Length: 93
Image 1: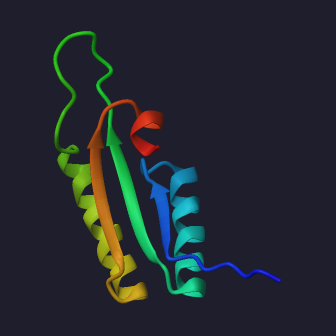
Image 2 (image 1 turned 120 degrees about the vertical axis):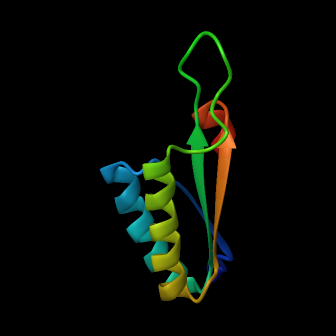
């Protein structure tokens, strides 16, 4: 019988209640499999004009940094954050 050998877990994170629940489950799986966690936060431009922002708003950035610190203390530093710009679904893939 084949067993799971999970090395990385990708968790899209928009700080909504559902994404924070997914984060909790991802942390649990990360501990269980001793896997690295990659968080991805997408900045999407909702305007017809101009470009998408390249940095999250200060309050979002602060919350993301707090979450990363908390996760690193739980997993021993095996977490990274990727902030991407573009369409959400396409950027996650």
